[in-house]
Amino acid sequence: MKVKKTAVPTNAVLFTFFNEIGIIAQLCNSMFERRLPDGLSNSQFGVLNWFTRVDNEATPGRLATAFQVTGGAMTYTLKKMAAQGLIKIEPDANSGRKKRVTITRKGLAVREQAIKAAAPLFEEFAEVLSAAKIGKQVKELQKIRQYLDELRFQKNRL
Image (tube, rainbow, N blue to C red):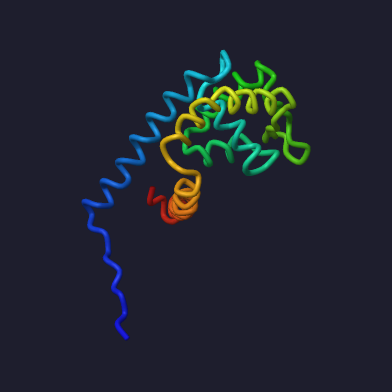
């Protein structure tokens, strides 16, 4: 019985793959941001989405690490979001210096509003590509994201 060899992608193929993902991300971010509720940026939506995907509480430092931005940049984003009532920033009960950040009901509602506003984009996209094809690609993309997420903590490689 013959064993099928799997071709190893070349650097050029891998570059093209990641380049395409980058272009897709830029196009999607731009289209999505135009449909966000007034006063909400992509980065702010990302924070709201993080709270629904990952955890219901975080420190500003944990969020900065998750989004790979400086502490100052994250603090700026969080202050703007707190002023809009999307999140709460409170002192950590166990530490005088640390802060705890949580999403508010308004933040959850604004996140849902943003997703609903993007529904026409999703529907248009679904007319071009089947849900079954997208579902298969999502699984592969999740594997790639998980690998890259873990890789960034190994010797600061990313």
